[in-house]
Image 1 (tube, one colour):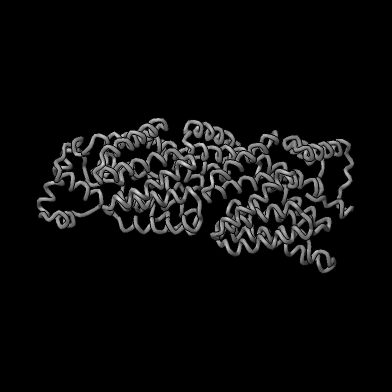
Image 2: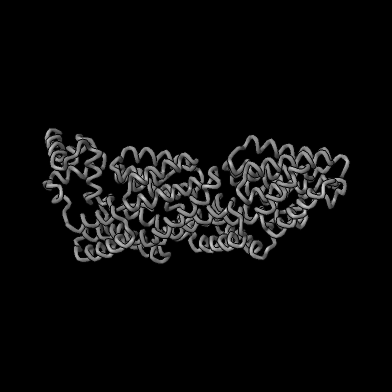
Length: 575
């Protein structure tokens, strides 16, 4: 950060106390060395002995931020703003409003953030009447950045991208490498959200070079790293995500007492290793994340950590633990979708799951969020018997996969198309799509997705009369699920390997046929029409099914159908 006193000699206060002077000097030295705890301690001690000037208050605020002391940081920035105003330093005052508005925007407090932005612009405008320099200064670029971030928070990716570009241009004009890196990185993320991931990724990679070369101040580095990893997740780019996470990890290790980014680093590592099939390692990383976040309970990463914990529990079949984790995620302000909807489906609550995932998809306006929820929509719609909704979701997912070109997204699209084709009674088309999904997932090393694709390949092979190929696929899938600890999937494969699922429930072939229609959400009248029997006969079959399966209602019968593989979509489980 620029020292305001270097341009305005009158700003620096002349402390009378030698102990105050010594504490300030120790604090400044600690900050320069990256010893954030020491800087915070010394500058806080100095502040108790006498008022700090705006520059030293800025150092105090920065150290507090890196230590995760959000309230202390905001309070120091407010005091720095007032001190700069009192000293006639419009640029220092405006820069403090940048940090205040930035923190508020991250916490989605748009009204207060906008107020501080407006104050910063007004301070510069009023001072510009006496100084032509302030009509065009780098502080205006920082405030332009927060304006762009407000557009991003409000989901206007196009306006955000344009305004981030303006901020980057101002930073380049004044050779402010911090602003250039911050704005170009954010511009890259805006391009990704607006549907141009190739250009966006290029800007992210350019920023990474600036970070690793040491051109960017520590106050900006962690935020950029974390944001970049999020962007890679949104693009389904596991390779880039792993590279950026490793870079963030190295930087965190170099900052001995910095804690604010360590929790996020652990979460990012956890998601990557979970997708790689290392669920125990992922759980250990999430435990570490929770330890870090215990020091910053209001951090937005707390909700994401709980969501990832819920995902591991759900995949392992610990449904009560998953439910509790998703609830904690929601309390922390993170929408636990699509995991919560998939959990409800696994619990046999297909109707609730369908309502939940439809709401989640409808609310997801930006493609990175929709793309993560659409596979679950397809699965749940098939389980609920709504093939038209599933087909619609698979179609949108295919369009996104073609536009974005990310391998993982392509695999999810192929899988969804295969599942819909099976539901439509077209196993040949399904087999082509499902083998493509398995191949892509294998190439990017996502073993759970490989296994679940092979299960549906087996279903398609069986439908085509090739029972031997089906058994080979099921054997391979079961072995992989067993290694992962995916108990619900192991049970589903075992049911499919036994052959007709009606054996386990003692159902006749006609009762099994009726159960398949029940699992699709059809009424007795619709079933009667499809099977060309009377509604009275259907009602008798439904009663016998409930009795034999020892279930109280259609929802529970549907859950049985999917658990035992009575319907093809039973094997469709999203990550």
